[in-house]
Every structure is written in C-alpha cells, then in structure tokens.
Amino acid sequence: MLRSVLRSSTAAAVGRASSLLPDLLFPAASSRAYARAKTKTKTKTKAKTQTTTKGKKSRSVSSDESAARPDDASNAFDGIDIEFERPTDPLPPTYDPALDVGPGGRPLFAFTKSFASLTRKEPTSYVDFSLEEWNAMLPEGLPAGMTKEFEETRRCAVMVRQSFLDLRDNFRRIVDPPIHTGTKNSKKQIVLDGPVSCGKSTTLAMLVHWARSEGWLVFYVPKGKEWTHGGFFYKNLHNEFWDTPVQAETILQNFLKFNKDRLQQIPCQIFDPILLGEGAGVGSMKKVDSMAMPEGSTLYDLIQTGITCTHAAVGVVVRLRKELSLVKDVPVLFAIDQYNNWFTFSEYHELLTWQSTRQIHARELTTVNAYRSMMHDDMMVGAFSHSTAVGKLREELPDVPLGARLMLPRYTLDEAATVCHYYLRQRLIRPENFSEEKWKKIYYLSNGNGSEMRWLAAFI
Image 1 (cartoon, one colour):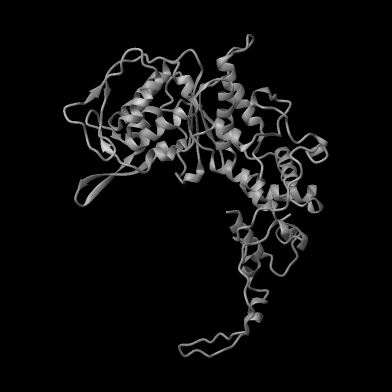
Image 2: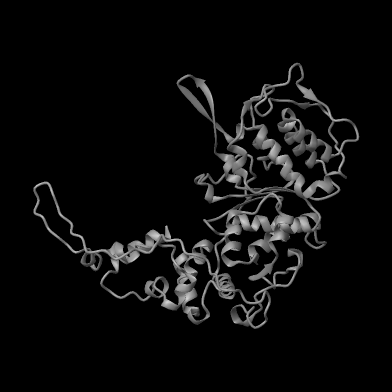
C-alpha cells in the first residue's frame, strides 16, 4: 500500500519540487552501494518509432524523447518495486562502545543472556542472541518477519519493547504473584492483535524464549495455518470431526524438539483408551478402534506412541491437550501463532454429491477443535497474523473470553529512533547520510510499520 501511495503522490507532484520524497527515494550516488538494484544491463540501441494503425494517422516518436516526457508520471517510479540487495560491506566489530550508541547517547544493546533480567527502565534497547541460540530455544521455527529482519540486518538481535515487557510481566505475576497485588489485573488468556507489521509474531516468539529460559513447559505453534492446510484428511468415525494424521504427527514431533527431557519426567494421569482413526494413506486398522497406554507411562511415551503409530496420532494430540491441563509441577503455556487461521475455513472440502462440495471449517478439524478454545484456566496466548490473508474477524470470537484481545501498537517515535540507530549500526544506512530529519521522515511516511521502515532505510 505504501508503494502505491508513493506512486500517486509522485503523479500529483510532477513538475513541482517535493521536499520529502526526493531526499528519501533518490539518494546521493554514494549511497547506491547500499541499495543496488538487481537489474540487468541493457545495451544501447537505436531509437525506434511507434506507428499507429487501423486507419489512424501515423506518427513517429523517438523512444528517448518519450522516456524524457515530464507528463509521464509513472516514469518517476518505474523501479519502485525493484528488490534491493542487502549491504555487503564488512560489518564493524560485534560490540564497540563507540558505535553501539542509541538515541540521546544511550547504549544500543542490553547485555543479558535472557529477557528475564530486563526491567521497565530498559525498554527500546536491543538484546543480541546468536542464530544458534534462537534455533535452540525455538526449534519449531522462527517467524518469517523475524527471520527477514535477521537476514537484512545481518544480526540476530531484537528490540525489547514496552508491549513485550507488559506481556511478560502479566504471566510472571500469574506464576509468581506479588504479595501486595497478587494476580488481580492479570489475564491467563490473551489474543495479540494489531495492524500489519506491528510485531505480534516477534513478541510471541520472545515470550516463548523467556518462558523456556525460566523452565516453563511451552506448547509453541509458530505456523497455525499448517494445521488447516495440506496432507490427508478423513472423517472421524467416532464423532463429527475430521482427522489430519500428517499434521498430528508433525505437531508431536515439534513438541518433542525442545521439551523431550522434561516430558520424560512427567507421568501420564489419564489412562482411558485412545481412539484410533485412519492412518496417513493406509486406512483404518481392522477390528481395532482404540488402544490403552500402560500404567507408569510418561508424556514422552504417549507422544512416541502417536509418532510411531499413524492411526493413533490424532488421538494422542487430543489426549496430550488434556494431559497438559493436569500438569501442576511446572508452569504450562500454550503459544499459538497465526491463531486467526483457526477461525476461518480450511483448504479441505467434503464431497456432498458428484457435482458439489462443502468447505470444511477449521473448527471441524479434530486437532484445531482440541486446542482452539480459551475457555479454560490454562495460560494461553494466540497471535493474529495478517500475512496469511485470513481477513478481518469480528470483535467477539467464539471460544475466546471477553476482553482477551490485546492490541499491539506500531513503533512509537522513541522506538523508531532506536530502530534507525540500529540500522545505522548495521550499515543499512550510511553514516554520512544519516540525520534526525531523515529518519523521522521514513517513520512518518511508513506510519511506524516495521517492515516498511526497514525497506525505506535503504533510501537514506
């Protein structure tokens, strides 16, 4: 949308000077080393003529003259959609007090190994982890927006915002309530919402990182859309839901990646038979419709059963949800990204007749139905993702408590200042072209949109 606004603004401003866009979008030649367009070189050819046909009067116009016409507003932004290469110049040392300077001379980085030690006095600073550390704490996968930020800045640092500290402290008070206030103003179920590129997925990933560093058991789903797309789907013979055994096996495998050692210490508390369904591409088992877990089994044994037996995968995922609600020795947090995909239709269709089908809603999937509801006493966070193009949902959602939705803002002016100084530090912006006036221009032009600010930084 920003790029279309820029085009329309240019079309209206042809023939007159602009005090904003030329400085931002047509930087000095020296800065082109940091924003080289991926365009192919073209050989010079002779000017060709354009001839009108179908009885109209023929006319010839030089291609050079046509390109130079000032009334063709589109020429000013022919390359607005060009993808720019990331900087390739060598980065300065990882930490340098002379370079690690934020707005007002404040330190740009907070030197800590965890988000737990940060206080409200230290927001709008960056915390630096290696990619190996991020992958170790979130082996299920990183959000796409966070990965793109890491790639373009060539550093795996994230900014600690006030909104994240508020969310962290909310769940900290639930597990360890202070004596004077208790859990009075805390919420166990929260839905993170907000405009595009305001940092919902990144905030959720940071919360998972913090909770796991504190020893919590976190059920993290970085891509909730995958629960409703792909693989096989079968009608459950025991109820009205639909089973997705391929997704169920992936869910169990992802949950084991970080929590394997802890799950081996947690015993199962439910020993009712687990219902079996159709396996992935192998149909149903003959004369067997359930299986029981032996006494003394752990949650690790339960999950391994679902992974090794495709017929039990969906049933184990449902049983795991019930078992996690009974765990009291360690705090349990459910963190679901792309949560809004669970309130719309899946990609599956039920065959009604040979001429018609019915699209299956996400709530009709067995796995989604088991984990979507927030009407319980467990700690749960769901983050909306506008990148999945679900569309706008109504204010009051089914299975979600009233007042659970938390709106995350885009960057404030102070946060944008820290971001631009970080981009300056990482050489996305050349020092000789950096000024307070210019970074404020891209902030107001992008309205605090994080991804658009990073895109515009190359033009300073």
